[in-house]
Image (cartoon, rainbow, N blue to C red; front, side, top):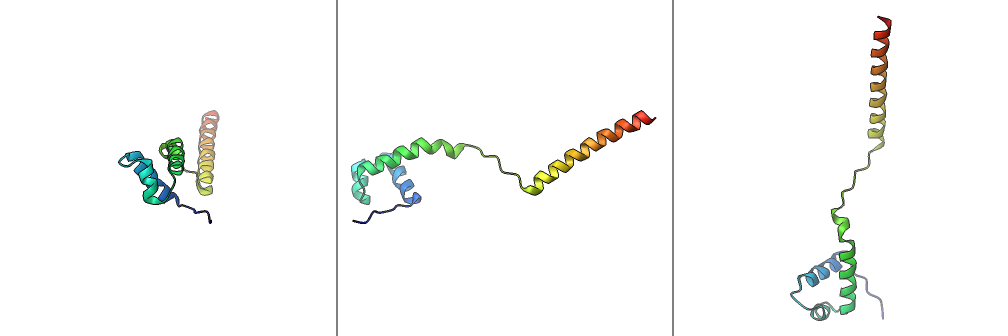
Length: 90
């Protein structure tokens, strides 16, 4: 017997139906041709990883943005140095 593969979209659909609890796991399993244990496994995995959805990820800076930040820092340092030297030479 060939092993079936399910898409993440399909698994999510099944898990969400299971979470709604409008039908029992047995009913859902029969409806979609799965085992109740498989649905329970997907549900457990979904719930254990659900906090990832709400984590904020900082966008990675591009090379151009990194270079721009480095140059702006250098400009700021040079301005401070320039002002200091102007005051010393007066």
